[in-house]
Image 1 (cartoon, protein in one colour):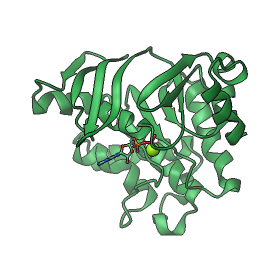
Image 2: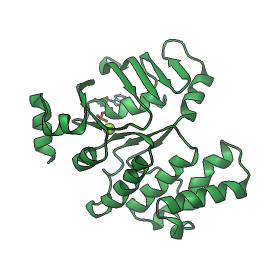
Image 3: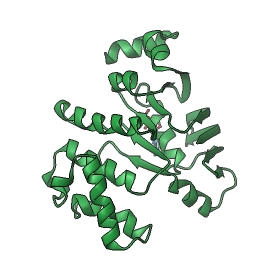
Amino acid sequence: MIQIEHLYKNFGPTQVLKDINLRIEQGDVVAILGPSGTGKSTLLRCLNYLVTPTSGIITVGDVRVDAQKYRKQDVLALRKHLAMVFQNYNLFRNMTALENVAEALITVHRRPKSEAMETALKLLQKVGMEERKDFYPSKLSGGQQQRVAIARALAVNPDVILFDEPTSALDPELVGEVLRVMQELAREGSTMLVVTHEIGFARSVASRVLFMDGGEIAADGRPDEILDHPKQERIRQFLNIME
Ligand code: ADP
Ligand code: MG
């Protein structure tokens, strides 16, 4: 589903991603853990070219994009396969929950408005938000906003959903409702890459855990291998701090 080959990203003189190589299969739920500043967000952003890689090749489905020689339409094609959920929801403030979810269907996919609204309503039902469909983001809790953001990500029917710390901005009591929606997506077979500090989620929902450190993938394996029997001292230290 996704292949990353020799991905590098520098910001000026700083090398943030160093030769990342990764294959992700359809249906994989990959939890990406690691200290802050190690390049986790940059990795997700390079996948959809929100950040342009310095070098490397990214393949998603049948689209292959080489950072050294690519066309604009390759990037647009790549983005069709991917949707992203951010820490701060990034909903449109001047649109209701329903309009937020329908927006890309109308403007990007050129669906008739009535059909887009119908699809959006089904997706709001899926995340348990249909009763608040006409609420503006400012009238919703963080957890509710994030569930709307997940419905919006699903609207374009992506092959892979990228989550960048989806629960990090939430009050503790609101984390569970968002993780439950994500768990349900995983159960349905969605392919997901999730940057998270929720070790419990990684343990119980992920099929695979990556540990990033210093711009590299320091460990890659099943949750029990990485979380219960970590080989490296730096992973043990990280888990001690988190748990
Ligand atoms: P993480 O998500 O693991 O916390 P990031 O990918 O956000 O890490 O950042 C990795 C490193 O890259 C950090 O040192 C950060 O300061 C730097 N960085 C990220 N984005 C930019 C940018 N747009 N310009 C310059 N430096 C950046
Ligand atoms: Mg980050």
